[in-house]
Image 1 (cartoon, rainbow over the protein chains, first blue to last red):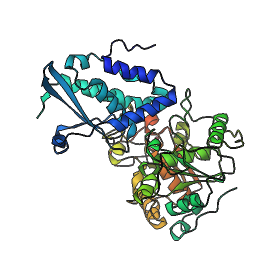
Image 2: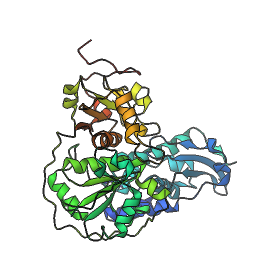
Image 3: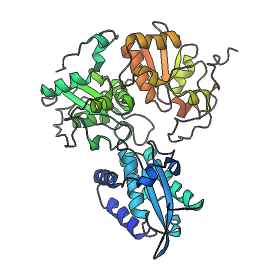
Length: 152
Length: 306
């Protein structure tokens, strides 16, 4: 059995929400997440070169991470873009956004790589499609490790 | 009770016009009540497992290529008993007319149609142009859940793979007869082992099956996702690929979905009797022990004959 104890609180809550549902309702929840993915801020839509494509996803997904200085120190802001005809990809992106946006780099890097598997979606959406989500988390971490760009 | 076949000028030129329907025909069939009386079941089959839920043709049911059609344990399609349960649950009887449509120019729809054909479902048709054309024409979509009345039952029919499905051993035995590789040029030459911008599925080697002609699947489709005309398809497959009437053909891609689209064109639009889809495709061949490959733009020689 997997555990969500090591996850940041918001992400742990999301994982619990998924785990408490029946398999088919988990898909519905993922669909709801896909609808709540916020659009990119204008400064990024006008600068596609600042976004990076995640090739492991079946549908086009672009993401970027930025650092932001706040009262609580430096935090990481996440930005994702995926087309409406790719709801599964959008749903994954939205889970990561809600669960990780605004955390510190250390907190995000500490998220276990197998976190996506804890959502209990593997059978409902197939292992191949799950790889896209793991790739997304991996890419976020890689971008943080390679040095954050301050928000424009 | 099967629904009447569509007749129009474009389809009439095809060898089996009864295998295609147009968006207009489908809209009229739905309006006439064919989906409510059980004679017609519309199936959506997409790459994205949640796309159907964002809006589908009214009354359509969803069949997912991964989670519905593949066996959980064996890397294979479901068996006759599982297919019977699936079909019945979707309101399909053995004599139901099934129309399949989907995203990405019907890749997965053609794949689902091919799986229905493995079970010998007689009347299964493809919506020419698929989901995108339906949407582009401003036709109705709904997010309302389809109220499915399960069919009275679907017989347990064991899959008959041999006529339309090739295994790796069949491909080895097929050398000397035509093969069509429908992947991108970069996949064919071996520059890359997966579709541009698609997940790497762990193929060790890049290249193609020796002697295979390269005809990327999309060349069979027009800009609106419909199949090209018979004349255009003949120029492509008889002209460019060099097929001749009566040929025994095997088509393949990476996992068998894009080649289902080409299989459909060869089998039903051009009328080749013996066309098999090699669903193991490059994911199997590119990793298999003791099989030859060819690299580069040349088709290559029949192994053992050079």
